[in-house]
Picture (cartoon, rainbow, N blue to C red):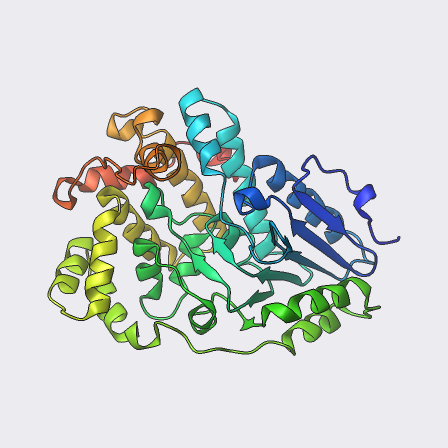
Length: 373
């Protein structure tokens, strides 16, 4: 069997470019006007490629990169297409359900891929971009990397396996990243287990060309070529670890906020200000998510997230319609009206009850009918 070329893999997305002239299947996300935000057709194209190359013995590994308006690299993936989420929720479009089911299946496929999967996380790497990179066997960042799981800012939660990989960060870094949505750079990503090493942007094109053209004899040789070039830079938030662990290990969101409020350090006050911008309801939901996920397998965590995202867009346990959900309101404020003034419901932590939070963790499907069964 020969390696599959782009013409031999049928995809329906113009935003996923495929090359495989040698023994490494290479994917370029090419939707730069949207920072490579994932659409349903892009998710399907990625799944098609990975499944085809998984079965091809001549394909030893897979590499994936993003692009910007100037060309390859510069931006990996800013997440899911939140404008589509907003429109689909208002229209009751069934494609919204398909999106999350198929995205989470893709995330699982990447985490369990039997061949090296190398993610070049240059530039923006957020939300869904983390979902298609955190399961990689080699995760490459650059000094331009801006990494985050910023979902609490739009009334959502860190999905795409976010509960799984954030909860595995050292100490209570996972809680901090999940609740605040704070953006981190290359050094902290490496230090906290969200990347494997850093590479200068100027070296990316040469390495990509080598992956395309080198006559590799084994999968290990592909990984070795990349790993040998990586470095571990210093992190920006290295000195904040003690404060993060002390505050974000506390039992409740209220306790975390109180501890931060009592600490005069600039980092504590900046963190407090960030949390006050987030949805109070989703802060409590996300803290519960991370702590449950810490002892869960990837499969169970993704199934839990699928339950949670259903409730985010169909908050019937809150007595609300899809149009009235925290997520639709958060997207409206950020990306539709762009007033950056979300009207959260409830507007205060004190008004968020345990019943509101618990409802996100009840599956709306019996086990035999779960979308990720």
